[in-house]
Length: 229
Ligand code: SF4
Image (cartoon, rainbow, N blue to C red):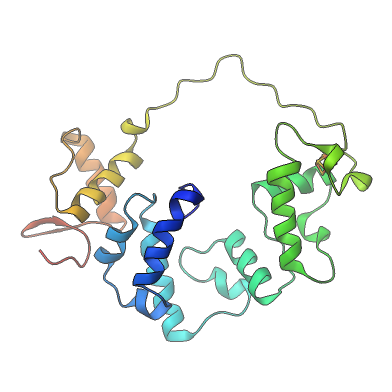
C-alpha cells in the first residue's frame, strides 16, 4: 500500500483492511471485486489481486520460510522477499531498494557483501534508513554518517547536474494509469465511467483492464471481476 501512497494516508486504509481481512485465509475468501473496491485510491490495482492470489496460496500451502519461497508468491519481488525473510526469519539476505543501492555504491561494495554475521534484518533496516536520511541522493551528510570512517566516497559525492530544461511531462490526467484507476473506482462505486474517457482511449484502457483481470465485460455490461451484476 505504501509504495504508491504516503504512509500517513495509508495507515487508516491499512487498519481498515486488516480489520476486514485479518488473515490470509480471510483475504483469500474475498471476491476480486471486494478486494479491488477496498483498494480504490491506493494505485496499481493489480497489486491487490496479486495479494489476494498470494493469500490463496499461503492458505493452501502454508507460509514460505525463506526469500526464495516468498519470491514465488504472486506480486512479491526480490526486494520485498528479502526484506520479509530478513526481518521475520533472520535470513542472511540483502534487501536492496534504491536507497540501499546508492549507499552500497558509495561504499563501493556489493550490498550482500556488507551484511554482518548476525542481525540481518536490523542491518537491512539500518541501511535503508541511512540511505533515506543521511546518504541521500543529492546532499549526503557525511559528517553525521556512521559509515564515514570507512567510506571511500566520504566528502566526495558530486551533485548530479540538473538539466537546464526538463522535458515536458505528461499530465497525470492524460495518462492511462489515471484512466485505469478512474474506471476501476467508478465500477467499484457503481457510478458512470468518467466523462473525460471515450472513444479509442476508453476502448484501449478497457482492453488493458480486461487483459489484466481487473474488469469483466458480461451480458449486462462492465463490472469488477466476481461482482454481482
Ligand atoms: S560517508 Fe557520505 S557518501 Fe559515504 S555512506 Fe556516509 S553519507 Fe554516504
